[in-house]
Amino acid sequence: MKVRAYEKKDLDAVNAIWNEVVEDGIAFPQLELLDRESGAAFFSSQTYTGVAEDAQGNVLGLYILHPNNIGRCGHIANASYAVSSKARGLHIGEALVMDSLRKAAAFGFRVMQFNAVVESNIHARHLYERCGFVQLGTIPGGFRMKDGHYENICPYYHTLEEFAAE
Image (cartoon, rainbow, N blue to C red; front, side):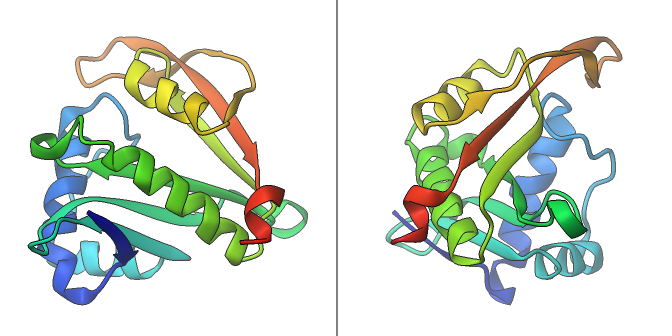
């Protein structure tokens, strides 16, 4: 498995993986699914979109990287990760997170911040903590789940100095 830059040929695969997570309704804030046009615009508008692929070239996961804010806070990055349900448990998420930290530093970001990690998303939270992220606190009822109930969200951050030298 390797992580590489998104290419236009990946559009159908990344749309399918992204939409799977949106449809699950338990991790991403988006409500709308991507079609070919909106997906092409979305993935190409990011600072960087990375994909994880297996040895046969099948896309297994992806991440998007972009500024978390503007102006005086424009040095803080944000990222989102999606792994195909068929490929979960294979440490693809870890490869995506670590690649995104290196890419964020290469693009000149100084910090990576996640605004809304759902508290019950234990696998993601454990992954982020293993990768060195620090939880900032808890926002009560910050995420509306697909079934309509609200769950807490946990913001996280990771400084990027250690990746700037790579």
